[in-house]
Image (tube, rainbow, N blue to C red; front, side, top):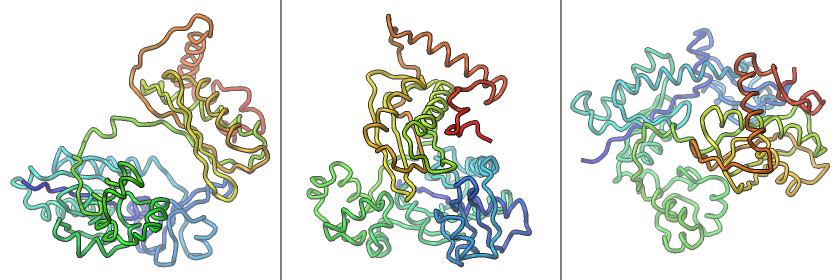
Length: 395
């Protein structure tokens, strides 16, 4: 039996949540964005009324105000979005247990075995759209396909409040004429590389010799070729979120930091939070990732693999500082700092040491976890956070 996969994508989700909570906002240009005062002034979502005025996700709030001065600007409230997302997932699971969250506002549903209960995939999609609209107050676009890739591509073809069916036989006529950038999995970097090969459309990629793509891009070259031809055999996995791949923390600084000593304070605060979250989930990792963004939004990301798994802030901090000193020049402005622990495993074996005093550090960090969980984040923290460079406990 050919699979029947749905991808439900909520329309302008963050803005739609606020419109659902406050009906007076419906039909008006609503923009959800950060706080320009603390330099988090980026648009996270815009209603379609705001989008028609040129507002786009990712632009600065300042630019959005210039394009849409009559817009209603709202600071993000992530707890609301998580609550609405949970309600929507609950509705989806009334149709099938095979629901895979793809992001906070998207999810795949495998309804192959549910059609005798709820009708055809189109019938199920219409019923799902109706329930989400009536019970949650937001609209969604749904794509239907024989696999996750085509369902995802179908959902992008008609927005807002769309419903599109895309089968294997539709790929040449409906997908191949599109720019290669619109293929799921092709980002700006791969788009540039593909253009060097004179690949401009999805059809160009689908008909390009896969052998050359494999030589040029490795295994991912064949993956891109398969996607361009509508081939995807990955299952809808309802347990996908239970396998954490990395734990990260990022902060936009209140001002540009020029001195490495200042940046190290922020790295220490982020390393402590990352390690605390790892311990809380019972994880340890071997790869530390440092990401930095300068005043012109140029992005740098570097990683270091540790000799053993760790969940200690001290280990994460040392590796991140090593990356900083090796790859970032003193005096170059930093706007955003991120630290992540990847290569995670649950409950790894612990290697005891004779001379490093590691067990003492483990006890100390776990004691801090307990104090914070009982008395709050500000109950105990590093003295470095009291300096002018600290951001975790500022304000």
